[in-house]
Length: 162
Image (tube, rainbow, N blue to C red; front, side):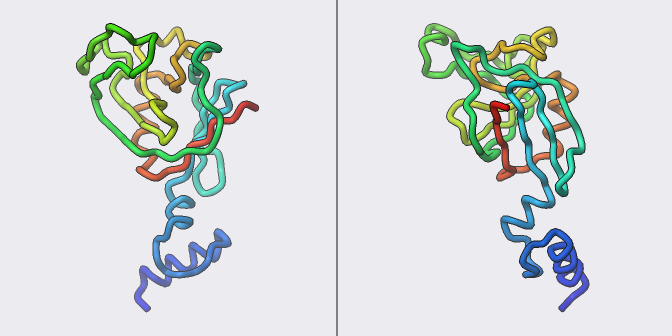
């Protein structure tokens, strides 16, 4: 057994995971952490190694377009994304918005397995702390850029009502 495998097994034992010496799903989740969004509080928490390491104020979906509750995964990450109108009545007739200051996604998109729902930046910083989106989680540009670096594809994302 090499040094890396021994170190990984020790890490897994400390985290009460099966000490396989391999980076399996449970070990990866412990390492990269997870995102928990409390919709009532309008707070996003980054949890790593079982501890909240950062809390951000966010905007959530309006009552007409609520953010779904449940457990999801990060399935897409994009820098300077283009915005493509969803297949939804509220977006009828809208066109693609290229990256830049007019883009409703800001500079980062963290797509989740909840259909058409992600975590993204916004240039409308006055919307943070409110129910203003069409279901997505909005963050200040600098904060979503920070979060973007801390999550990986497959990271757990939970949207909680309380």
